[in-house]
Image (tube, rainbow, N blue to C red; front, side, top):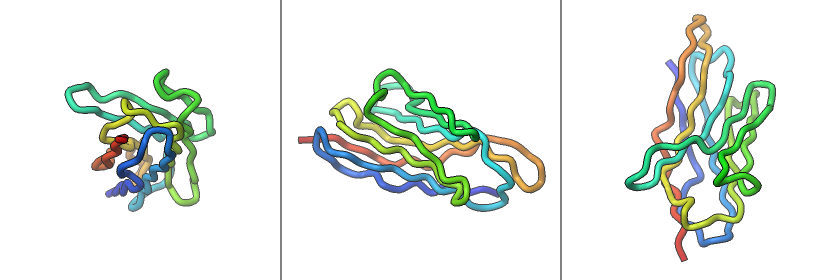
Length: 120
């Protein structure tokens, strides 16, 4: 079994920075891709950023140049540094990890989500 714990959400003003964390624990052998998604009220969940096991990254167009995804493999943790926040960044942010367990099984795990609100 694998558990994900997200942290770092909250209320920020436009332009301020915030960093989200997602730590995985449990029967983990390795973690492949790590992703951050977000879902705003009334909208579909969208991919914000992805980082592969080798470190290559992908960003959605709406966050390019403002957000940075990184990972610490020793801690089984993925981060999302969010700079230059905009009102439209308000959403629930979810982490998604593709985990290979110590038993050889491979599957995606989701965090419960953390609310980020950008408000003046």
